[in-house]
Image (tube, rainbow, N blue to C red; front, side, top):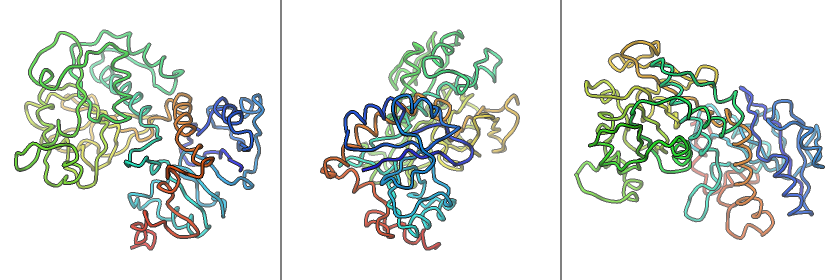
Length: 400
């Protein structure tokens, strides 16, 4: 079996890669019967030379490989027929902008596996860059706070050499006693927590966060039932929320009355209620000054996320009274950070972390006959058709 690491071709350029040189060397030692090739790239965070120095073959053509591994969507003109691909396709939610991609995958008889659909038997995602989005998103939240109030200046994350450098810079400013609320307890939330803990920001309970004043910065990490409540007032569990999201409404307003910074790291299902509304942000008792929307669902559950921002220009001002974008130094503006490709600012760390997950969770499935169903659950297309699990995408493919 031959695996090929493809060059990232989507714009803006993405420097991440599924496997670092060290990871591929480890795989070669673990599976000597398997061949690994790397397509030459001038943008990857690891140079071609770093691969060749470890005895890994770098080539200009990977069309002879059985399985091709990438990060972002492959432009349709570069899709190689009759092979297998792993990448983030951004099609499983019927995203209109990628309909042509899925149509081409089917037309070219490609077996598509989406990183997002790689789950265990309990439907829990096994791989992703969420942790690194949380790390960079939290750094950017403090960078935005420093800029808005002219308290301190932090360099862009992309100019620093990894997570430890981010932490070093974050430890330098003396922060006022701000309150930080973080939504989400998954991989993104774990990345946020890692940074906040490294900064020695104190984690407190929901009750204490809402009711007490502190002389130091504090944060609270909240789950879905902390910021949503049933319409009928009953108390049930998370499973009930996931099964019946329409029976809930947001209870996030109680946090907007005391929090200075909101870091949004939740996963939001289509039918779940709005989390942070314009009305909440426009209320006279709203204290929020910075919203770092790591989830970045434009016109979604966070009202101030009017558009995605970029690594080059990560912030804008949001005026709640008019629901419009304004200069971030406007006295009534809330600063919004909504970069939709945050892990790209930490490409080395993100690639190494992602590769470890892929090596642990996915590669063994190729060697053991997919005994745990990892590959079968993740496969979107096969033999020019959608697999049964993803047959709900047929109307989307047909342009309906």
